[in-house]
Image (cartoon, rainbow over all chains, first blue to last red; front, side, top):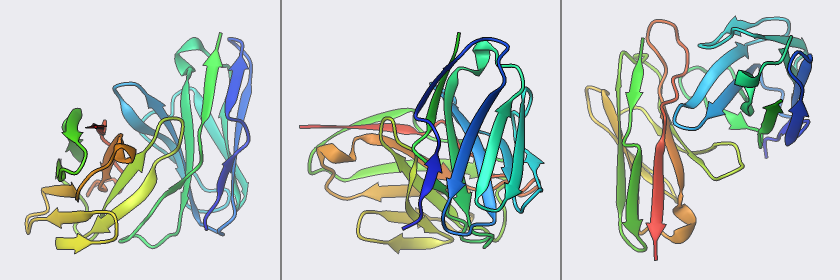
Amino acid sequence: DVKVTQSSRYLVKRTGEKVFLECVQDMDHENMFWYRQDPGLGLRLIYFSYDVKMKEKGDIPEGYSVSREKKERFSLILESASTNQTSMYLCASSTPTSRKNIQYFGAGTRLSVL
Amino acid sequence: LAKTTQPISMDSYEGQEVNITCSHNNIATNDYITWYQQFPSQGPRFIIQGYKTKVKNEVASLFIPADRKSSTLSLPRVSLSDTAVYYCLPRDSGTYKYIFGTGTRLKVLA
């Protein structure tokens, strides 16, 4: 079974703090994704990575950066957290098979920025 | 850019068949369309995927017409445990980015 583990289920941070959200997958997947999920807006892609040290912007990258130093780990960084970044953050991974791509998700991190 | 449109919510009774249709334009020509299910406080999980016509597995069926501008997820004889949000996920033909919609919140009533 594929396992995608997000380091925290709940986080509370203060405005202006630097925040790291960590994600680890154990299936040797090349692709990894970060989404945020807000009521009424569904899932929106922040960044994705298709290989170590590679990254691509998603639909809402502003205010975020990512790091992928090892294949199994993909980190989302909020350089200076703001209240509008309060959200549920979901990490996913998938194989590079493009036609039948299936994404496997972690349980999510609920971040509150005060 | 591809856009997905699904009904925001649906109610059904236990034992009924539920069909959820997702409209999607400008999707990648050769990619499969995938559907996910999400329970509260969990990440989405894969249900089924297909390319054209009809596919079926142990939990659902999926019908995709020849023009691939929509797909319909069919859940036979739903139970209370099928209460969840359902998302279709095609890929945009231009950017090749995956496009999640807002999902359909299905509520199954006893």
